[in-house]
Image (cartoon, rainbow, N blue to C red; front, top):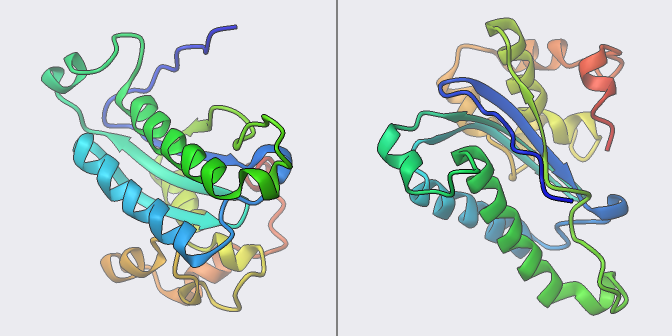
Length: 192
């Protein structure tokens, strides 16, 4: 069955996320995280109109806040059935899947031909500024929400550091807006 074409709108923010197949780990070492971050930078060079406003890499999943700022010329360079966000994510995930399989295939997959990711990737359109702030905070503090660190700034594999410097949102406000007991539909849907 072919992939459904996703309709990403220009200049609109999207929360994009995925996880390992059967919740398997995607990152088993610092080198894995570092390589993925280098690949983000590489794919941003290939797709310069994709703006990564926030990201967080966790052991078995990741989150991005992406925006397509493309021009007509850039869109003509990719497959007409795709969008820049889809092309960006496809390249990034395919690169990581090949790396992961070559490095860990025998150990993690037990020589079975299993996928690395649960599926293509999930995305949600960010509809307003309040939702944008919530998603950005959710992504930046995701490692803290999963109790991987006691403070969001301790997690090296997120955009928390550059986002906390470039905005006026204080750390206390971030933590308060992302209470671990938050039961909103948005957070409930994203259990990893």
